[in-house]
Length: 165
Image 1 (cartoon, rainbow, N blue to C red):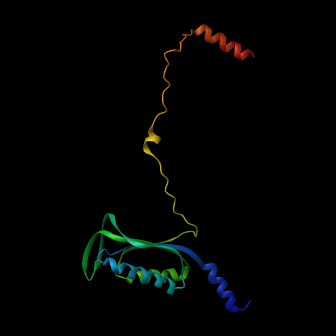
Image 2 (cartoon, helix red, strand yellow):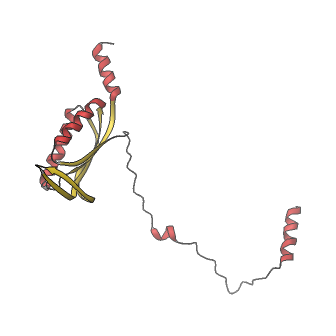
Image 3 (cartoon, one colour):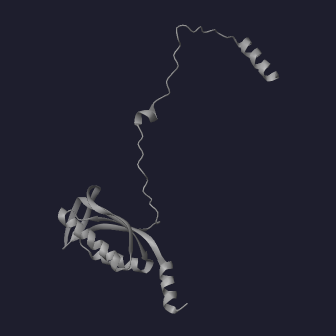
């Protein structure tokens, strides 16, 4: 095998599946969000990453306020555009990608995780709350049924008869 083919095979072995989750600044105009989204996809492609799946960033309320210092001003955000991208990339190139994203002032926070290629999103299941918590219906006595009281001696005789068999 020539040297270049060995290098290509080695690079393919070093390629892993990653998922990038990110929060974009809410100050970005809604019509400019696709531009930021496209720039991120181009950035991943520029590092020879292959995008498997992704989702356009959507405005969401944050669980807690986050701070980002831009131009020596501390800004607090309660909302942000959340998006994610799943891609295959050489493990060495991911560090370079991280450095480039760190420099982009549009990102509040981001996280890059190793993951698997398969879809890991659980399908939503519909569960009715009243079925889960409801007790089974109790049997009602009918008016025409006759309830015969049994005494302890009769029960013991019946058990002995069943055990003897």
